[in-house]
Amino acid sequence: MNNYLKQIWYELRHQPMVTITSVMGTAFAIFLMMAVFMTSSLDTVPVAPETNRPRLMFGQNIHIKYEKGESSGGMSYNTARRLYGNLDGIEKISFANSWAVNLDVSVKDGDCVSLFEKKVDDAFWEIFDFTFVSGKPFDKASVDARLKKAIITESAAVRMFGNADVAGKEIKINHVPHIVQGVVKDTSPLLVQSFANIYTVYAPEEQDNLWIDGYGGDTQVILLKAPGVSDEHIRNQVKSRYATFASVLKKEGKQVDYHQAPYTAKTVNLEFGSNTDPDPDTPRKLRYAVYLILLILPAINLSSMTRSRLRRRVSEIGVRRAFGATKAGIMSRFLGENLILTLAGGIIGLVLCLIFVVFFSNLFISYGGKFGNNDIAASTPTINMLLNFKTFGIALLFCLLLNVISTGMPAWRASKINPAEAISGKND
Image 1: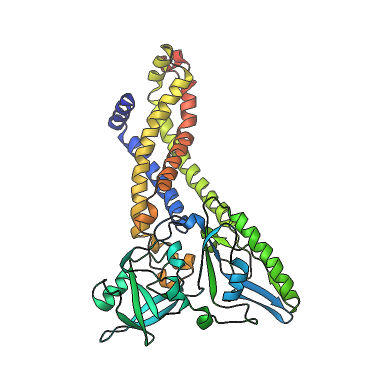
Image 2: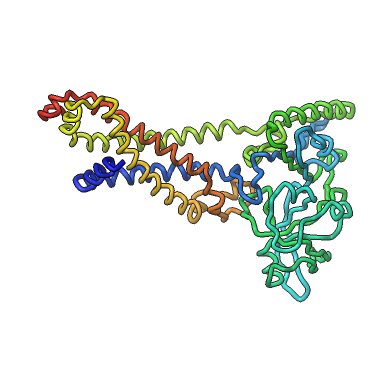
């Protein structure tokens, strides 16, 4: 390692522009690749309160055809229980409203504020790991009794009361009194399955907007798989239930279409309709194509610079070969030296990427469009959503690939140089 560092320092002093350009070229390549990777993985990375994302699945819609046409949209509570209740391999199941809305919330002698609401049950708080700064989550008794209680975020509490220790105090939601059950730390709006400013008790008999003879409504299902259970195991059970449901609807002159539900955290955020199957393959293939382009094009340019650096070391290569150095030894030396430069460029690129994604990415990427909510278009990812072992692992993998592609051919050609010609300076 010490010899590699000495050689790099020598190169930096004698070919500063080539060496610096090589490092910065690597940094730019890693920056672009990691920016694509980070922004595309925001809807799957496990981060509080959605640390269970790899085990989550979602049931959201129903698509029913009948004699005069067809309709699709959210499910009724009864339909949701029929299709998703008591599945084998499911640890927890939560029922919530499909569509969150903005509500007018006020306190006595205070201003009215607009808060983004999500209606949830007690299981919701067991599936998502929120941090409570005051109070506690809904319990089953409160949900079953349909009590007028609410859980608000820390920022909402401060806006209305001036502090976060407000459990037990009263607020009015659309002029209806509610008691604050608890206060949770704010979450990023990009975590769309858990994000809200205020959470109220879900009462499907009061809030389900029923359609198609009560089969459609305003309910979605959140499933937490038991550890080790596959997506297909759950999906096959739901598909079987759809088949049973179809036989019931057939007697009424209706038909229900199955669209690969329930969906994973990755699939549920794709843009697809309630009457179509999701297509996760096309975005994935496009993303891999982008990775390939961002890897190959910089590698070609970096390869030319590597060859330029090696051309100045032809005599050194000849001497090493004359004293018994093998072709493999020559190649490994140059790959090792270049790997250090590549890693240096990779670290710079990763840091630049983190700065860009956190502070500037919303200027170029419409998160609101991607996640289906225009209210969060200005949101940007947090450091916690970006920094994880997978991110560093992918960055290291890109560095290794870039190093092999950009240095492999020049190093291989250098190892084949005839020692006598190299020492005499006849080889270019």
